[in-house]
Length: 129
Image (cartoon, rainbow, N blue to C red):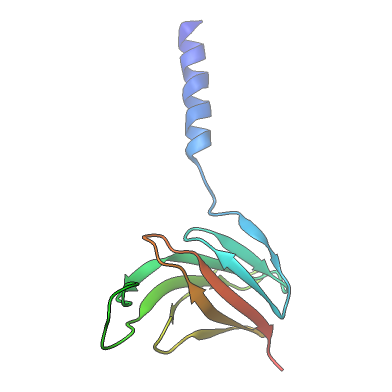
């Protein structure tokens, strides 16, 4: 009986470790903005998915420090079209280009990035004319 219980407990433990990726925070309507933390995702109005993968580099001037250049931060994103099996990775910058990405019939624009080791980012989602 003890061996059956151990097997059952192991099965439950393994099942709880299995993930299929971050669950979308919510659906973002065209013409609105959303804030995501690294590892979070959102569903766009066309059922495609936007994932904030990670902060890749941050050379921005720290608050209270005088710098010659404001610096730049780079975040890694992923866009998965609706009903698609493949995703497209891309980067967005705070100061340099690109600050926007064309995701099918929408444009995703990085509008703000907090300061932190895992900074939240704010994105504007607009439909293309």
